[in-house]
Length: 156
Image 1 (cartoon, one colour):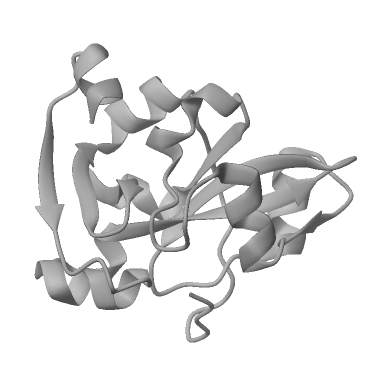
Image 2 (image 1 turned 60 degrees about the vertical axis):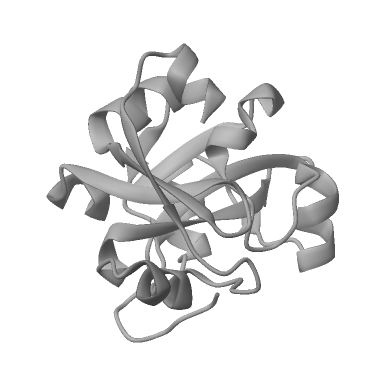
């Protein structure tokens, strides 16, 4: 939130029980549409580099589609422990806004473009911020890509 304030970006804060660690239940607890709440996933690309991908909470990241979209041959998901070690944040509290110092590539699924604003994790379990999509893309220098799998599957 300090990062957004420093960038002059307006946001709205939503809180929920920090014991909730997945986006679908977080959306329900905040009373927000699940397709407008985006989870942040840590992905390994290239030779051990990391990237952050924000996708709708109830959807699955298509790793092959993601790798193609960013010009990589392969992308893999680290274990929960690996993601926590790489970010210094706990599952349910990983958010791109809290990781700007990492200078990792940040990607946003194109489904976000159907909304004026989306909710993303603020870098702490139980706290999301609602930010205009254009502001989020600008301050994170995020690339908008097609990264989600077919409807129906969920991998929290």
